[in-house]
Length: 216
Image (cartoon, rainbow, N blue to C red; front, side, top):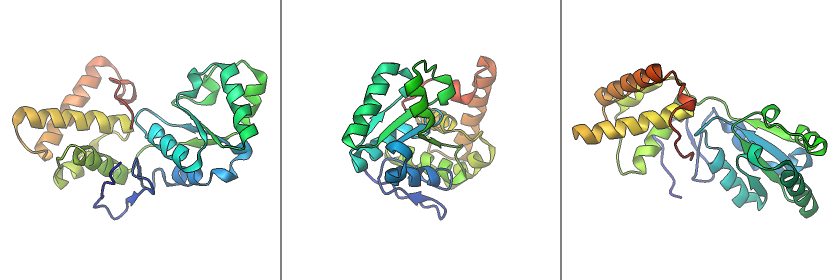
């Protein structure tokens, strides 16, 4: 992956290049780096759509040679239990990711339930302003585009802070800019945010449950 340089005083580039680290997820980043201190070498990473769980898990796997399970709540209880035992026997860490708290996984195997309860729980919170700016810059930099400082300033003050919102608005601004054959300025950001909010109002959906977009 290519590192994205962020012109933000408060933003940090992660040791890896797959995700951005700011105050919003710095503690999560530290937990993943310090996997040797996890209880039973097992952790559960919980975060909303598009919060970077998959990118974090891939980097963790590369750094630790451990096991990862994306969407762990969808794995059969018996299979997850066997994987936990396998990781334990191999002395390797195990990272489970999910968009749901463990209480909503519907675990029915008592032995698995007790092991999950004893694992380190790592939760990804809402993005801060630096994260929002960094994600938008990264989105456009990967496409050889840019977004104006005016547009960034407008969005960080007015948009609802969720990772899904960042992706949906980035795509909408991209489409508007192509349609109008204009750069991504404050005017494009204003129109995109207005359209986005109107769409959500009509559909009755929250940003986190809107159209699925692959998580980075």
